[in-house]
Amino acid sequence: MSTLFIADLHLCAQEPAITAGFLRFLQREAIHADALYILGDLFEAWIGDDDPEPLHDEIAAALQALHQAGVPCYFIHGNRDFLLGKRFAQASGMTLLPEEQVVSLYGRNILIMHGDTLCTDDQAYQEFRRKVHNTWIQKLFLALPLGWRLKIAAKMRARSQQTNQYKSEAIMDVNPQAVEQTMLRHNVHWMIHGHTHRPAIHQLALTNGEAHRAVLGAWHVEGSMIKVTPQAVELIPFPF
Ligand code: LP5
Ligand code: MN
Image (cartoon, rainbow, N blue to C red; front, side, top):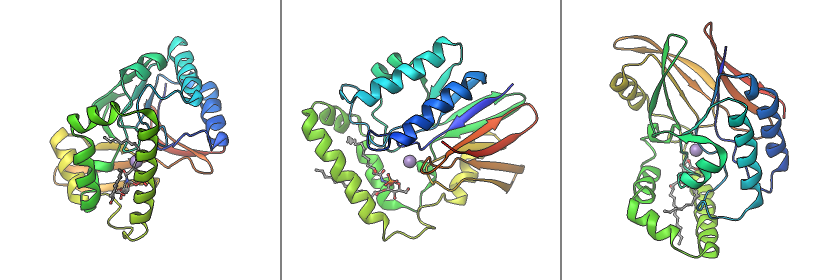
């Protein structure tokens, strides 16, 4: 009995080794699990379900095969693929979850999320996030021709990389108070998230007792998953 969690794969046509690693992970690991949870940034950038990029069909088919094999797959949006919608969810057989979700697994209540909302010290990012999560701005963006959307996304990525050079490591990590408040609000002692690309399992002393924050690694040169079983919560790196 096990449930798997992954995040921050940043799949794109330019990184075939990561795609191959993910397809192998689905066929060899996820197929034996009770469920798979993808906690955001599955894709490098998502500009709408109508993007004809062939990689998206390949990934949808692989996830659909997992679904058909009886392994449910759940998805929480990341800051790169927050526009992933119902059409892709249906094609891939994934169930879209809200940005914060508590799951009950083998007696543990675990809060799962992408993790970007916990980075409250990064005010420039939170401001950017508020804008791009506005429903009307999203509708307007999705109504633009595909070529325009690709260009805007590329500009955003470039600007993001540029501004991140000048942000300190501390600013781009989670804020401890935000973590505590979020866990208390959901009344949980376990949390799993991604986004910061700092894989670790942290022990925390909350006002209502000991708690744990498990952080997934990004898939740059190797894969990263968290495996929850009735006995343990393990952070596991593995080669592609
Ligand atoms: O993603 P990453 O790891 O580089 O950095 C993130 C934060 N950056 C982002 C931006 C994304 O990378 C952009 C992805 C776009 C894909 C989809 C496009 C859909 C558009 C939909 C519009 C409705 O999330 C970064 C954080 C970092 O994580 C750590 O937490 O610091 O935050 C930023 O970089 C925010 C900047 O500080 C401000 C960003 C300015 C962007 C301005 C864009 C202007 C484009 C103009 C186009 C006409
Ligand atoms: Mn992210």
